[in-house]
Length: 188
Image (cartoon, rainbow, N blue to C red; front, top):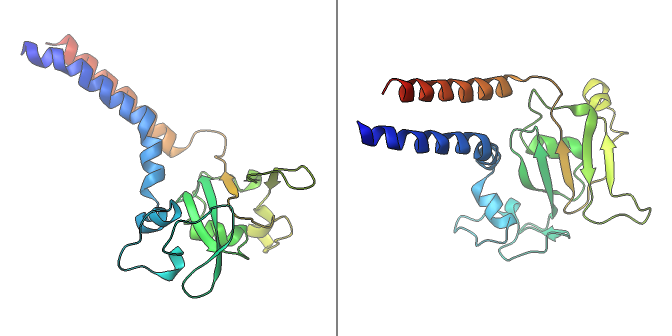
């Protein structure tokens, strides 16, 4: 019984740390295709290589490259409120709608009004980030607010302000776990 009391607090502290700090990382990693992310990171190809995932050699991520079928591709990063965030390989002429589609679409808590496209290096006009409102596209199909994507761009889909179901469930989980732990410690 005494051993359980000595072990319970470190276990609960570890669970709390894992829940608070690592759950966003696990969620972000869970939505990526392992074969695609391996290629995007310059890893080795599996024997069942498919041309849409890029060449079978390490590539410079700041440039265009061709797949086995001659299609010109590029790597773009997608972060935030999409269903499959991460590095995504898209055709050279892909726009934001194509990118969001490949990333699994916007999540319910995503804010289409304040999408940010960030370049790795500033352009000749000195601009490095562009704010894009996707609402005209979703409402009327208007792509006039889109920015032309370039290799290694990072597209950030922010979260809407306010409470989301995911945030509420995370808070409830933390509080209930803490109360449960306090109850066990108090009653031993």
